[in-house]
Image (cartoon, rainbow, N blue to C red):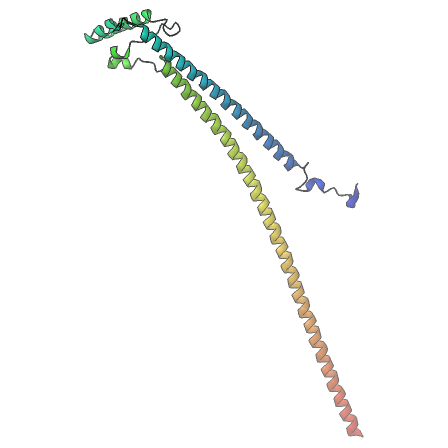
Length: 237
């Protein structure tokens, strides 16, 4: 048993830095700081990935421009897709268009890094062919889709971090409200004690006033009896 009558009240104080609430608050702040740091790291990685995709798109565009210039000989444009245009113009059917796409793939299969699944050019397509076009088959579409995926992932992770931050803020707000309520209740109790003390003072003053009046009345009665006795003695003489 220690001093102060054997009571150890330090752990129960709200300002005790080693209290359970203080330790829980420190752990919560550290966890939130780690989450924010991880989120920033993910954002930097996503930005770096987007920059790499952008650089790749620029490089592919330059290669296409060089290939387009190389296809012009002596100032005269060489049409590499004459067969496809003829097939589409004369309505050769889906088989003819498929054969045209295969021939185009054989001729320009290595144009973009060795890909052999190139589709027919846009001017040789029909409405039915548009349904078979994969938005990720060409480089700009693929880059755009990758960027959209990265942006969706960034929004998702950012939303989760924001949700965790909002939950932490809500928890802190609840703690502040409880503390405010506790202080308010403490103030009410204090005001009740003050009012009780004032009531006791009022009753004490009233009691003293009554005692004073009773003492004065007794004195008046004694004076009256003394006067009567004195009159009787004078009458007897």
